Image 1 (tube, helix red, strand yellow):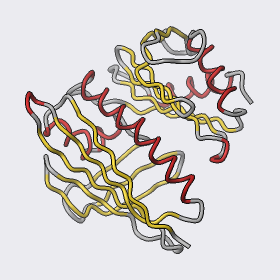
Image 2 (cartoon, helix red, strand yellow; image 1 turned 45 degrees about the vertical axis):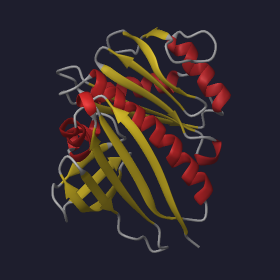
Image 3 (cartoon, helix red, strand yellow; image 1 turned 180 degrees about the horizontal axis):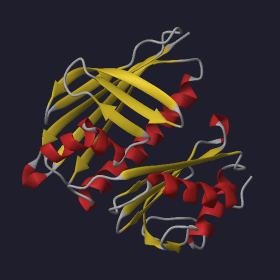
Image 4 (tube, rainbow, N blue to C red; image 1 turned 30 degrees about the vertical axis):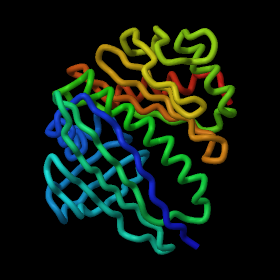
Length: 252
């Protein structure tokens, strides 16, 4: 039996409403802070497509008010589950903006686990959106993804990630990191998100690196979802390099 749900989040963004709209209502903008790769057919009735790990999720745009409101909704699955998403944009003084997100719909039998995971996930992605607009305005990123399952639980995976990033002890916001990924230039930056035991973010001069742990009840998977702003990137090459880094991580 399905369970109705509603999830709300507000975030203050150091950007104009027009900049926020570009970030949430265009494929390249969404790719610069959200999961997977996105395509959008603009206008009410248009389609949105999110591709991640070979899976494609489509939705229909139900509201399209540039600079103000965007909403979409998936078709109901055979079990009645569906997702609806609404963004509301409100300009503030001095070029800042409040973005309100409302996600609702019907979840399946494991709705409590899924609801909790969505809430934590939005905390990370909206934090990434804020970092994108504050530090990389006017630019778009190439998304880079890698996955590893069976990583042995939160304590083991975060100890391994901390060691690989050169951080002594539990990872905390403000920690400086410097590490290498075979085939890529050395990476140096700062921890800008630390939502343990679920996610960690590292910001560099040309990228937002995101490390997300699914939890044991959702597959025991470590997901790398990076947004690389440097010019001339080869996303396929970067994904191979990061997959190698992830495979070599001492977990599992």
